[in-house]
Length: 155
Image (cartoon, rainbow, N blue to C red; front, side, top):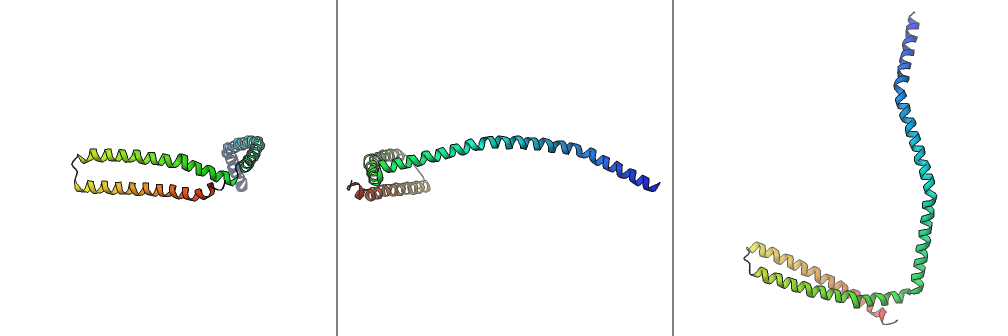
């Protein structure tokens, strides 16, 4: 009789385990179906995406070849020199004039106000830093103009 009770308990435990695992099996089934739909969608989209990427690559290659054939290196240097002379340098000169005028206006307006010494020291340090950055930017533009200038006179 004892062996039959043990067998009965084992069968009850196995049945309980099966009943408890049914929701997990359903969840796994749903997840598998979702994964299958996702893989089907990816499988359907990949050929179109790769074809688009290939086409974009070919168009870029054609564009680069056309630019190289039309402009060439000398034409590019001449265009850069022209852009520097006709657009960048005048724009920077105008910005410098406008900034100078705004700074002078601001300085004139603030000169009439009373400040404490630490605030004046801080403002002077900020103005000096801004002036250094502006000089550095103008120096870079001048160097770029000098670097491009010899090439622009050959074409």
